[in-house]
Length: 323
Image 1 (cartoon, rainbow, N blue to C red):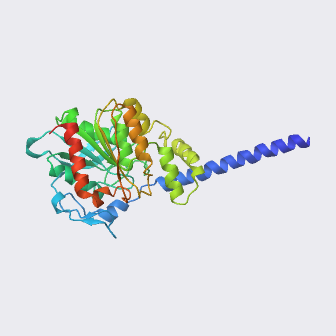
Image 2 (tube, rainbow, N blue to C red):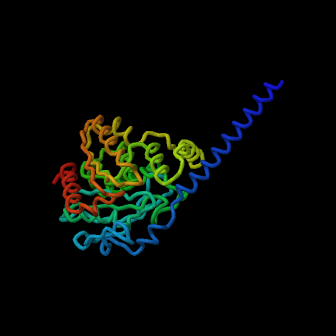
Image 3 (cartoon, rainbow, N blue to C red):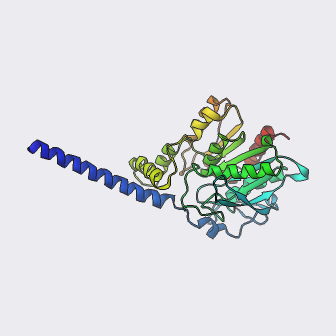
């Protein structure tokens, strides 16, 4: 009798513990994936024609953005997901050209952030067209559920932008993808659906290891991550256990061009993700040596190594999309 009671109490305690763990994880998912208006509050007046060259508005680094400013039109795009409208900027290619790059911002950011506007301006300066959408739940696009999903949902916005360009007459082999941070995850997953060359700044190989690093680097327990991803999947319906960028590179890249840049001082996504992505791209048929930028923080390389970043970015897409 006593053994049976101990077993029942043990099962009850385990059940209570599991419910408590998952409850905490659900709250953690809700708090940590909510997208606020921070980008619009901080950069709301920024446009391609007037943006300032500041990685961080408070303390920089700052560069002269004048050579990279450009004119663009405000457009609306339908995501691949029904009911979601994306606000975007479009600057057509110079002199009737045919090469366009979709520039995708990161988590909590938007098209008005200089971290997206600067590389876009570099591309425009070299004759490329650019399409810059606000992802769902970000910027001025449709607020679906108010949460980011690490690219698991957002890739459909990238494909929506892709389809918009195709409907405008741009050839598939003349459209490239640029993504930073979560945007890198979004374009990497989108690449599994359309034959695009991808340029990845501060991206991740898989969401589990990337999220664990971020949690622990911000003082949160990494052992919560599996439960957070599980509860995020249950609550939102987004499958956080679906194949990530590295898995898709291995299975779906089929030799298409990839460029990877990452800073050693990145406290958001570990620089260790870069060689993992590169190994996956190599396994997918396109050998990659990532450009590791010493001392650069998260998506900061364009501001600390501006000339070299511009040269590498434009040379990559000239090679991938043609001159």
